Image (cartoon, rainbow, N blue to C red; front, side, top):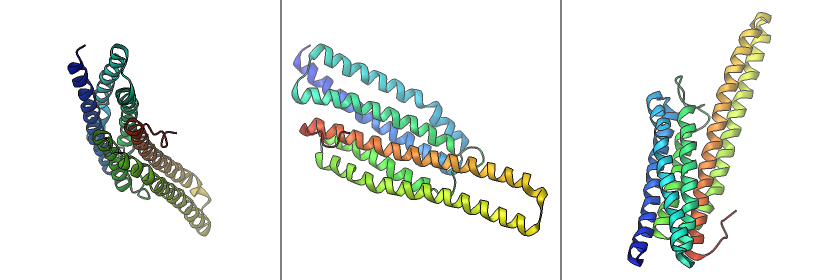
Length: 238
């Protein structure tokens, strides 16, 4: 392969990764909206569109494999191809998590109100978008900034999870006190049904928080691979 064509393929690979990142961020936007609003049509669109992300992933994976096998790149070129290979894997997993989020809203409405899915989702999406932008710009400072922001995001997720569990406990306590005050022994079955519904809602909310936290972790992975690509520095890889 002529070197001019080789350089073009490296540029095309980089552009393809950035394009995949843009698509995944758009899907994540829609997933968060579906989770907040309970929009079943939007959720279905996110879920059914996941195959397009998978197809892009497979095409870019093939390109990375061919470049490694046919060109045997070294130094910076090798790090570019290897980082791109890892980054598209993280982006594909973000898209999978987006399909989970889209499904959490359900036909009855959005995720438990104790979880501010919109703000958490916007923050996670921003981290992914910034990580992809850092890859495109080869910006090591942006990579380190994304990793530093993750601690704050993890703390926000922890507080959200605690708030959900706290509301569940308080609601169950209130039901128990109301039943005891009324002396209504026959209300136990109704209370059990209400508790089961609350547990389902809480479980869904906790899963949403977990998936948002994982999305942010994938953003850090992208930043880590980019930093290694640019500076041969593995400090963020874990």
